[in-house]
Image (cartoon, rainbow, N blue to C red; front, side):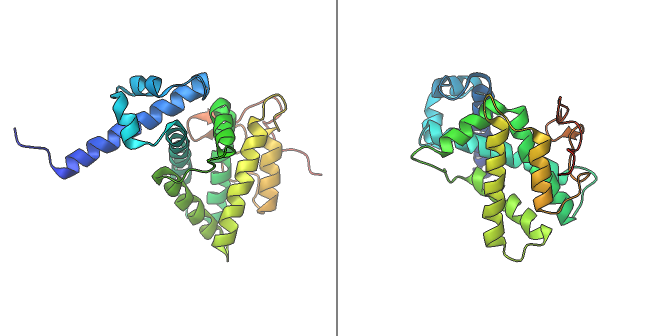
Length: 218
């Protein structure tokens, strides 16, 4: 049997890494961060435990990379969903709804992610985070920003704050209210993106006891 080509080996490594990342978001979403071990993740992914250390420096890097991958894939699906559009306002609305939707649909996971960012090691730079950043920066640029370097970090900060508010245990802010505030800030019509009650990326809908309709104007 002839040896595998470099491209085949690279694809196998990518798939192995992706299985670890997917297993991480699945397990942390089910059990929480502290109750999930690297061994659990390797077992769920069907990988040798040594591969975790090969690809990642530790549990925190693995987890942040996994969540950034999930956010990137969710955002990409939202932006490319039919009918596909190049309209910057629609794309920004879709981006906001996609990220807020993750906080609603995966609260345990996103709480752990926000808590991890606030730890001493802070924000982990990784390929998954860079892909997510590229999509968000591109969205800001298409929206019409004249200063992407300033407006992208602001959008990221606003989204992080909104995710925290949605996922906050015990006293979560209603999705519709946070969405309305962000849409007002960016001058977006309520019907853009994926309004509450419509299916969001990932197959979820925004139905809720107090989130299914547009809030009254102030």
